[in-house]
Amino acid sequence: MKSIALDPGNYSGTYKLVGEEISFDFINTISWPGTEREHDWLDVPGNFILWATAAGIISKSKAKLLSRISGVKLTKEMEYVQSIRYELSKILTPLAFDKKPPEGAIADLNILIHQIVQQRSIDLKTQKWVWNDFLSLREVLAPIIWNAGHVITEIDHARIKHCPSCNWIFYDNTKNKSRRWCDMKDCGSRDKSLRYYHSQK
Ligand SMILES: [Zn+2]
Image (cartoon, rainbow, N blue to C red):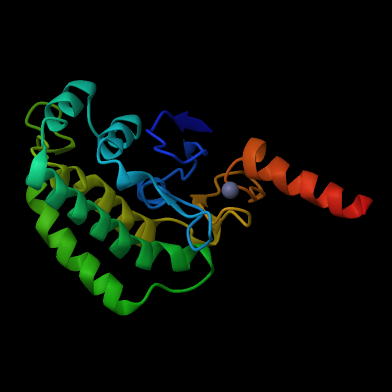
């Protein structure tokens, strides 16, 4: 699992790309959601650009340009980024708990999809889908929103799981659907040593 050097602030954990789908990795920018250890990596605005670069959405040179956004504009853009993460989490988290996403949340996603379609084009030379140049943090969300649509409509929901230890969500692409944790080395070994501890008591 690829760990990314996001600024942890005063938090003592690490962030890893474990989701196998970018919309899952985006939602996982909250560590330990719903627990007392909950930590939002995007509270440090620069982390969103670092994350988008590591996730392969933007190039390093684009990241440099986008990191010039500052002040009120940055605050507003980050508020929007976090609100979209909340919207996507309302749809994708239930899938990881074997539930259907609420219809209202899908309707909201449809509105977002209609907006971001303007950012897609067919490249004249390669004749493949491309995303237009990202001019704002808001625009960087487009491939993530698109991926959420892909997750809902095109992938096997039975393989969408949550880590029983930390609640991160991921797509299990193992042959026999045997993946259980976000990361064997992290939550997997923690879980195993806990079980060992309890069995020794
Ligand atoms: Zn975990």
